Length: 142
Image (cartoon, rainbow, N blue to C red; front, side, top):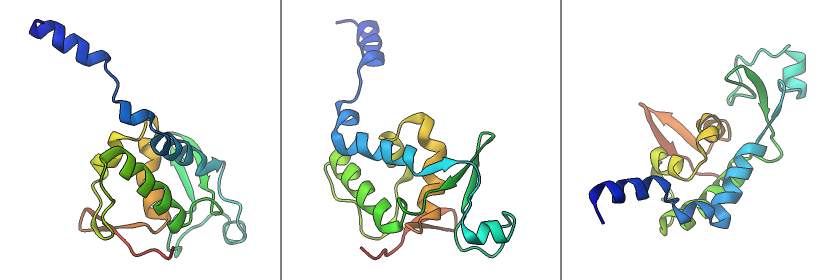
């Protein structure tokens, strides 16, 4: 097979790991983690949406679309559980329990249109913390 044929063939090959159930489930979870419109929790209503002083963000703007985090689905332990399953399925290795999170590896199994939701969810759930530009996995109660 010529080099041109090999390169063209590579364009149409889909990584089979992307169709594994835990990976598909993580992408669905990431989609469902946010609801339409601003947060309507008691704190946000009382403060008219002013989130100053909040430890974690409640409302997000994704390319002009205002959304809110669905707290019942996105506790740090829930996000961790879903991420661990997808990570193991995709990489065939356990997600490290602490230290730096390889965000680029996570993005490999997250659908491109969901990339904009990934970091906000990881930070807002408390699963990771931005430490000097790196994402550090945080201890989360299981």
